[in-house]
Image (cartoon, rainbow, N blue to C red; front, side, top):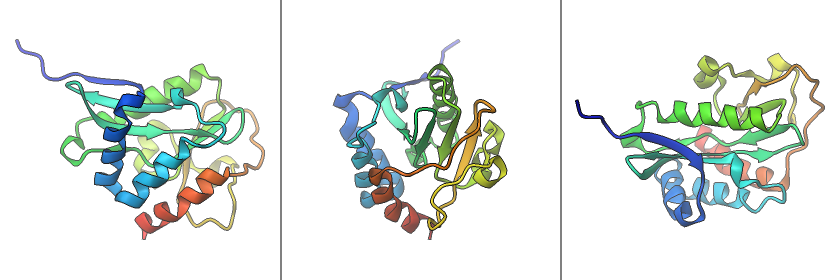
Length: 172
């Protein structure tokens, strides 16, 4: 019996950053890719929270979380190359992310994306979990609670605020 290609998830590697940028550019456009790259410049950026998916040794997907506080992280939508969508790569990225976040003793993770896409993973709209972001932002978001600890109002870092315009254009 022959086995198919293997999906591996691991923290991003500097040598593969151009391939990761190409994925975001392909999936969401060049502005979005530049915005995601800029999140790596945030003062609290942690490469362990930037997870890539490798399919048969090639980078085909990525998700990057940025800490909002000591116990809450936030991310733009994950990016999976179109030819690899529907092959459980996004699920593998999210499961790895949840495990990394649990080990880091996070209270919650927030995704700036349509809440309906992530219900099967236990994500719920922010309002349903008493989590609030800047109310002037018109960006869909969902969260996964890892604990029942209370979460104070969260201030978005400047790198994420700068990121939001390309995200909002994508949602339009």
